[in-house]
Image (cartoon, rainbow, N blue to C red; front, side, top):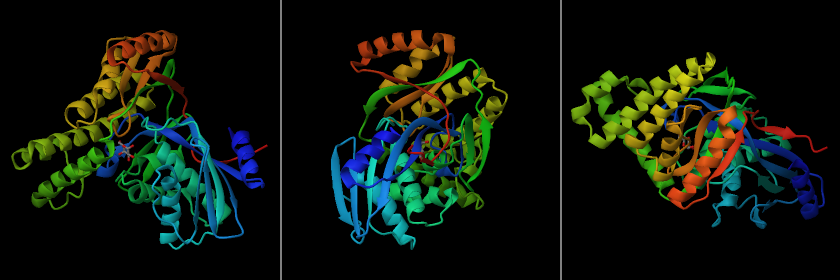
Length: 384
Ligand code: GLA
């Protein structure tokens, strides 16, 4: 992949580029908690977005996307959202850098990768982080990864229109081989927890659907959580987010809250509590206990947060009855994408075969499967 992108770059621009990569992510537990100042437990995976880049002597920006075999050209002084989607993840980063007073000149950039798009594995965050890391390096901007994470997140807000939390960008930048990141989204304090999977493998099952309400519903969930906080904080001025709320406090406000808002808040409060337990399970390599929590999370996302869909539910229900699966749940924002499954290594092939056939029969769709490993975050690549 690195050689390939460097060669394509050379063909297009006749100079040797520098190459950078930023990975996709999984999330072991802690879904829809990041924008509620809660905890998340993501990890970077062995699928990446690659960016090849070189400075130009003029003020033009030439982008080329290998996946679409398409150029996008603009000027560094004319950065604005494009009609097409793919350039926006790159332009959004440029815009944020400029807005924060960083001066960058013209550049050529080629983008490629093997993170499936729309699978809930944060290909867009990986594009933002790879672009940001690349621009930071070639223009000597002096940003560290802690400064980059919120900047890449802002790029998603403004140029992709999704009011996402910090998890995806943070995980992509800070990933560490064979470790999950316990991130406190309130203050960005983090701890690496060894993800010793023992005899289990992390298998992702891609529904290959992305229902188009994903981004609008995402923003709605965020508003519903804020609505809950506004009401609870009227009696409890110290409550700034759902992070400050426990079930006891939430139950006391049940009558004041819209029933839907109550359900949303309940899920988030429970998920934060569950996450702390999941971190202990992981430290003890108790995958059975962790797996039970993953199923509980899925149930909460399905019933209370209502961000699942029939394809995701089918996959989780199917494996629930299989003893060699420790746990499973939908991963990411929801409304499609992947489930994450902890499957005993001896059973992986058999289960993949069976569930692929069952999914096709039940849903009329092809299932795509990925066996992933946990890897390091954003970095420069060695071209040779
Ligand atoms: C998307 C967002 C993240 C996070 C997850 C849900 O991936 O980008 O910030 O909110 O959904 O946990």
